[in-house]
Amino acid sequence: MINVSYSNIKSGLVKLICEELKTVLERLPREEHEESSAVRVGFITYHTVLHFFNVKSNLAQPQMMVVTDIGEVFVPLLDGFLVNYQESQSVIHNLLDQIPGMFEDSNENEAVFAPVVQAGMEALKAAECPGKLFIFHSSLPTAEAPGKLKNRDDKRLLNTDKEKILFQPQTSVYESLAKDCVAHGCSVTLFLFPSQYVDVASLGLVPLLTGGTLYKYSNFQMHLDSQQFLNDLRSDVEKKIGFDAIMRVRTSTGFRATDFFGGVFMNNTTDVEMAALDCDKAVTVEFKHDDRLSEDSGALIQCAVLYTTIGGQRRLRIHNLGLNCSSQLADLYKSCETDALINFFAKSAFKAVLHQPLKVIREILVNQTAHMLACYRKNCASPSAASQVSQVYIVCMKLYGMCVHCVNGTWCVCVHCAHVCTPPAHVCCMARSHVHVLFM
Image (cartoon, rainbow, N blue to C red; front, side, top):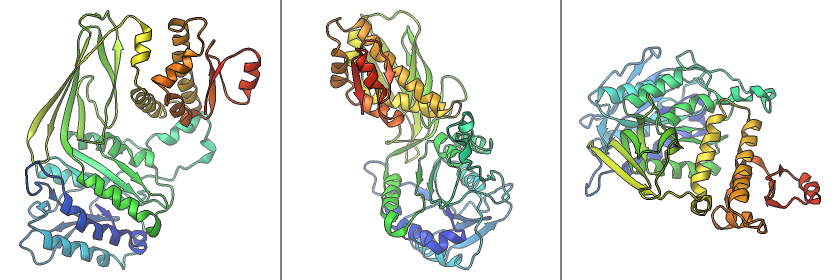
């Protein structure tokens, strides 16, 4: 889906996209040991209306069909819209050569967004297959259509209790649309090229919930940013991917999965639904320990994922994991993994942004870190070895403080009492015999 509004045509962005697609489509993902890809491709251009293209292999020239009813989007053709690239290569290349010229006289600067996603989903639904939408968009969707948004970039709300409003979607349209996309195995990857406010909090909800990716190039300049964009596009098209996935996590007695973080959608408490799952995505699972665990039998976790491959096969992948259990906190600290901790705390903070002010979230992160240090000092370190706290960070969590600093700025924690302060306050604390681990 290519936004062919006036600014995108005049800047040369549409021409750049069309030229690159000729190369990228040669690299469509395929099953191992297969010579060609089974992926079919289709093309839509849009501004305030949608243009569908028939690129059937027996045509001399591509044919365009225009859908003006963006309130109730439908797919005007089935045969010839989604085609095998190798079979229709000449027609597709003709289309990509023609698109920049088709709209060079257009003065339309407004654009829609939700109807574009709806159109792609309806096309996949009609073809009875899952798939992925690549949308190249550049502006706030202000045209009269479902999902219309307004500019709400109010800097007066920053650092106030109302700041969280800026991170919440303006309308429920996009969440509802994302839910429908997941139900039909439609993943959305969005390339944004904004020169002004574009409300990522609303538009980004669709790629987030459908297992897609959002790439944002603010004030895109051809000579500076084109290579990064092309690298991102090539990488995203070529990556291994599975569609229409359902994941379930099972555990042995004593603990259970309570929350899931990532590009997922959940209609109930057990089934994790993903429109797509690729090699760059991760699902973080939070477990609750609610019963006694046995050190002899340990803790058992099974993760089962049912998904559709690029070739259309339905497959089941199962991971079984056995973890040791210990009644000693020292063993826990020795075995902790910084990457997993940062992944969990970062995604938890991202989720909390929708409901709490940033200041509160920062304080929670600091307090959680301080509590981790205090627990070690109280339960694991000998009274004469206060420096062991820093040793724990050096051995197992040496990058944890630095990563938390990325959110909170420079701060320090007393290894005796877990007192938290920021410079220059820690100088006074040290005068009162506080022993600090400083994170910078």
